Image (cartoon, rainbow, N blue to C red; front, side, top):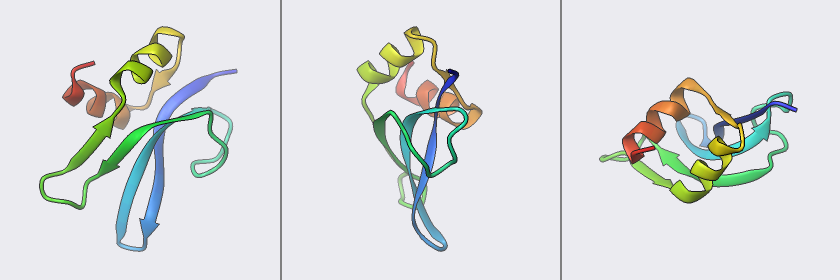
Length: 79
């Protein structure tokens, strides 16, 4: 089972916000997930990013692969 750290789209049309989740790579974007790590809201000024760094680090150490976008967000947090 390949595990990914990726974004799950929430919100209304033209007003998205995202949850950072850990999910099986075969599950759909807004489908089943294993654990929620935080939120990301690019529509606010300044951008809101709340992330549980300890959980994210644990998942990366256990082999979860972040997507490109999540990798950039993790870099902002300092992981």
